[in-house]
Picture 1 (cartoon, rainbow, N blue to C red):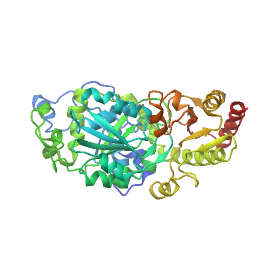
Picture 2: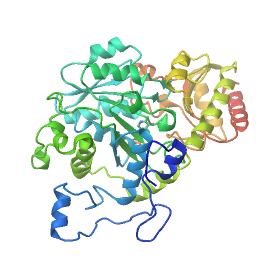
Picture 3: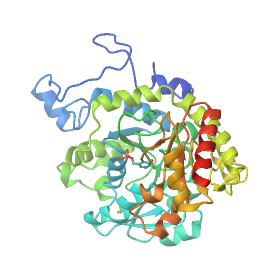
Picture 4: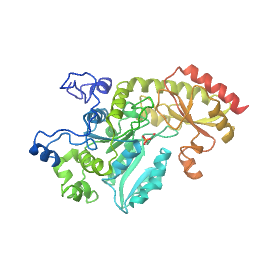
Length: 430
Ligand SMILES: *Cc1c(COP(=O)(O)O)cnc(C)c1O
């Protein structure tokens, strides 16, 4: 099929980027388990290496199965191109890589996946990069944090672990006024619930490990480019606007226009950082995406039922689900996330740390794992696991205090989930 805006999301999640295999007619996208691709002749090889012709050279850079996934994700997010890579964390480094340099900083929301807080506050320092964390509900604080060395603004649409919702349009307006790209991690919302590019985001990153693949089988990541940022409007992004020494002086923006970021991601990012997605992982993720909208509808429906039940339970202190009418984010959720706010939230127990640990140990249907976005319902005590590397202040700011359990609601029967939570709360709270 030819992809076009005339097709709806449910059609595109199955068909975008894919066509019957030209050699065999295979209807499902084959797993092209090949490292290298035969050149037609020496001229063809030279044209590929000069980026004058698009094709396959070596699977660290491009692979036909991965390419289908890239096209599908770019289509579902409303972008012009996408680069897949080995994990969500790889995608974040790959997104920042062309923008940053020694002494440069990214301004990031305090409400992020715990691993991202660690990556940004510790590991990127090794590259001479740094991050400044601010509360993105406070747009003045965001404006104040941006300085001459800032090269990107970063947030999650539906933020881990609390399921808080970001007003992407409002944040994008601030980034735009400062001449900076906005990177949105859309892992928890997925393009079914939120399309950050339509709200002004420059780049969208994903951990495809989560809802996109959907059943906890493979890790992967992706960066989708809106194609809308003018990399040459200032001298802040020389990797894209000026001659790139890592590619014999090629000017990516001048040469590739709206595809500059995507080409840079493949020709330099994957080539030199090597955080490549393998074709098996792309296959599992393509299979998952075929049912994304159906699963997300069920995740939302179940999360609303379970969060509503938990909120009314006397053993529960509070529930952070933005889809609840009582949430301080309820109005924003309705305005910015009309199809729902996903399946992720935290629940605080009146019994504190000890009750949380007992609660997690007593659940039977819920699995105690460091993952989210599975068909299965999952639970984790963030303070003792995913957010363990954070200071108590960072834990509180991220919504992962010691009295809080993170829940990722699956697509099982909601009544069974509620019964399981009830019996575990009975054991945890005496
Ligand atoms: C899991 C996750 C990541 C990291 O992705 P990996 O695939 O585990 O590397 C980043 N952001 C969010 C919101 C996540 O949930």
